[in-house]
Every structure is written in C-alpha cells, then in structure tokens.
Length: 561
Image (cartoon, rainbow, N blue to C red; front, side, top):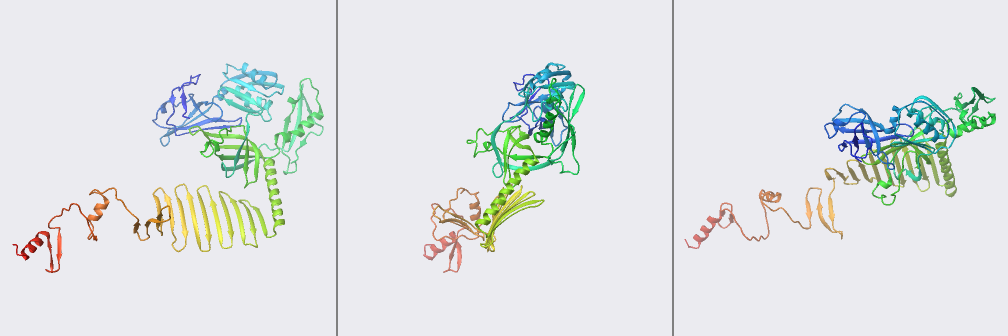
C-alpha cells in the first residue's frame, strides 16, 4: 500500500488527504502486545509531499493483513541524511495520552470500567471501547492520563482485569479482551517457510516466593505462614520474593478466608509462570499463501498479533503452539518481515526434553534392530551434532548445527557428499576418490566445478556463463553434436547462417583483412575487381601479370597484335 498523508485537523480519513506518499523508499509498522504500535518510513528529500511531512500530521498505512489501514500521528521527522528523511508516527490510540481522568470509580466488569473512564475523560475521546472480560471487581483511578488508565501499571484496566488480557487497537476502537487473536493452526516450520530463528532468555521479574495479602476496610490480612513458595524455590542461592495483592478476588461484603487466599497464592505461579525465565523467540518467515507455489492452495492463511501459531524446528526439537508477541509488517510489500513469540522456559525445556527422550528411544530401537549402527547426538556450547554410523558397512550420515552455519555429510566407502549452508553461501560437493564435483551458490553467482584431469569449472553470474579449462558441446535431441567450443578457442558447427552481411559487419571486416583466402570452387553472379588488384600467376613465363598485361601478352603470342 502507498501511505497517505493527512493534515493535523483531519477527522474522516476517507479521502486521499494531502496526497499519496508515492516516493516512500521504506515503510515498516511494528506492534508489540500491549506496548508500542508505531510506523517508520524513509522519504527522499525534494520528492512530492516531502515538505508536508511535519509533526502532528497523520499517515494512513496498512499494518497487518486482517484489519483496515491504520492511522498514525507523526511525532518525529529527522534531518536529511544521504538524501532521505526518517519519519516516525505512533498509532492514533496514543491520542488517549493527551486526555486526562481526574477520578473514575466503579464496581463491575471490564466493560463497565472502560465506560466509566470514557465518561470521566476531561474532553470527549472520540474512541469506542469494548471488552469481553466478565470478572466483577472494584476499579479506581485518579489523576492519570487516559491511556495509562488502560495500560498503566498498578491499578490500570490491564492490571485490575489482567492475567493474560490483550489490548487490540483498530483505529478509533480499543478492545481489552481475554484473547485478542485467533488459532488457525498456521504452521511455521524449519525447511518450509521459516527463514530465521533466534532466541533471547530474560530473567527480569522472575520470583520464587510470594507474600500474598488482602486489604479490606484498611485491615491487611496475611497467611499464618506468610509466604508461599514456588516449586523452583531451591533453584537459586536465595529466594526471589515479591508481594502480591489478592484483594480484587474478594467481594466487598465477603469475609476474609485464609484457605481461599492460600489456594489463590499456590496457583499464582502456575497461572503466571513468574518463577521461570521467559524465552523470546524471533522468527522470520514467509507466508506460503504469498508465494507463487502455494498462493492458490492456501488462500486463507492469515496471522496477526495475539494469534497462536505452531512453531516446528526439528534441529532444536521444538514443536509447540504459542502466541505471537510482536510483529513487523512491510507496508509497501504488504507482508510480514518477522514475528516474535514468547513462551516460558519450562515449556520449551519440556518440549526439548521430550524430543531428546524420543531420540534416545530411537537410538535404543536402532540398536535392537542392528547392532552395527552407532547413533550419536552431542550438544556443545556452540553446536549440535547428530550422526548415524554403520561400522560394518563403513557408512555414516551426520548433521551439525553451528552458530550461523549448518553442515550435512554422508559417506560410504570411497564415496561422499557434503553440504554447507550459511546466510551468504551454499556449497554442495560429491566425491569419489580423487574426483569430485562442487556447486557453490551465493546471491551474485553460481559456480560448478569438476575435479578430474581437466580441473574444469563453470561460473554463471551477471556477466553470463564462463567456462575455465573445458569445452562447451551443444547437442540436438538425438544426441548429435551440432556445435562445439574447443579448449584451444576453435569452434565447430554443423551449419552457420550469418544474418548481418553488409560491408560493415564483423564477418566482412574479417574476410577483407585476411592475407589469403582459398576455395575449391567459387560461383559468382557478378565480379567487380580493380585491374591492378587482379593477379594472374603464369609459370610458363616465370612471372605474374595483372589482367590487362596478361590479355596483351596472350594476344601478342597469337599474332593478333
């Protein structure tokens, strides 16, 4: 989509506004679950609307494949660098930061709390609010901007009605819901549509002991034992302790119940996974429905923030369904650049452990079936290697995953094949003794090499096809050679037709500059030649003549002159 620019006082956003930002060189939208939602674009200096890109104006652009194009308000315009400016804008929902709530109090579900905020705003918001969270509790905020009332920390909508809530922003509609996405069983799989996979471990906020309490009528109630421990309490040298307020789980007219607080506290770790570090996975991929091969088969393939997707990576032993945490969308190409997923370490560890268990079971089964097979899986700091070796048949297959590189190898007696893959190059080699073939591919060229007596190699690149130490043979459908380029530079062809036959052609220049040219028979329709250029050799007289002298000599010899 071509982004559209609007003036600061636009309210409808249905026309083309100030115009289309048609010279935009890049335009990316990033949205993180319940956090930032921004657009960043680059624009050439001096292009159409360049001088109109100013703060507080609006940009409409596509940010995903599910919702209509979204509105963003410009908050940053850079100085020109290398002939371009960078423009940043935040989602229209951030206008709620401009509004203010002096005080808002209610008792009810999340929709009631949102309505209360909206009606107590300092000026009309222009937004619609929605929630499907039915839990009833007390809600109270004071002297806070409207966005912080929803997304802030302690006492906000998300904090009060939280535990997994998602903020879905669709232009002037803000929804606080239990599950903001869909589950369409979309699979992102290694060697299928996954193009990148990285992981970050985060221990921030990890706790193993909580101090649960309830406050009612200015009285604080706690458990007799004071603390509740996580099952990971002995993992660290000392406990990681935090207080947790469970007051919202008790109605105003409900008496404090120690056992209820104890149950709430014991389930807190399981429901929040706060006792284990989180693993953020950045997955780069391509939707198969956006490729030529699958576009007519997978028309409904669609993902968005908050959706659950299946991540499958055989090399890491991962096969799990997780929620999308963050997305980066290319507005100009209308496709996702990457997504980030978030799931806790115990989940992924359990998954990997299950995979390791399956590997061990497979190894055991293989050993039962054939004692000649040796199966090895080694995990080191910087690599993972899996190999299967048949010691009796002298045959082995292995795969090694390193930092930034994958190596695959198969060998049997004197034969072997090898494949090496990095982000920049792929090398494939097949060998037999001292002879081998190699194929090397990168973004600019393809190399095909043969190691034998000739040491020939062929390179395909932007200059065309280059053959070193070898000949080029062209054959017809019956296998008959019709053209051959020899190693010494000579060429043999079955037949030849010269299209350009005028006096300025390369063929004409070549023939005219040859010292000698011999033919067995020559048929000429019309011959024009200069007298001095026509030379007749006559061995009887011991010298040569031009045409005129030769005719005079013949006539004289016959006595005619």
